[in-house]
Length: 61
Image (cartoon, rainbow, N blue to C red; front, side, top):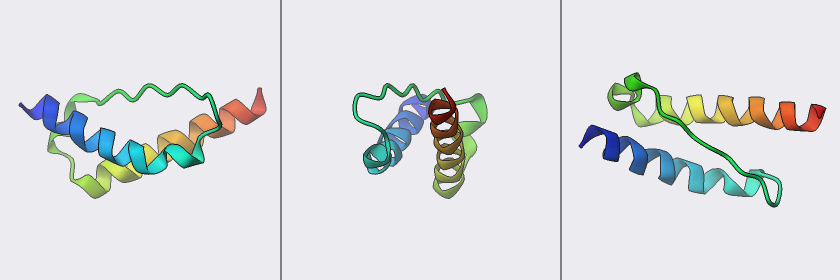
């Protein structure tokens, strides 16, 4: 039940961030065990941080 709730929250958060990704990009979002207890704002901040890092690495290649 918690796993599905986290998945729904992350899917919703990620949908709002899709326009910032390059066309054709593939992103895998993996929730760590503590994500079930995290507030939505915390999940959003962590997701933004991870996406920013991934985009920087993609540009460096």
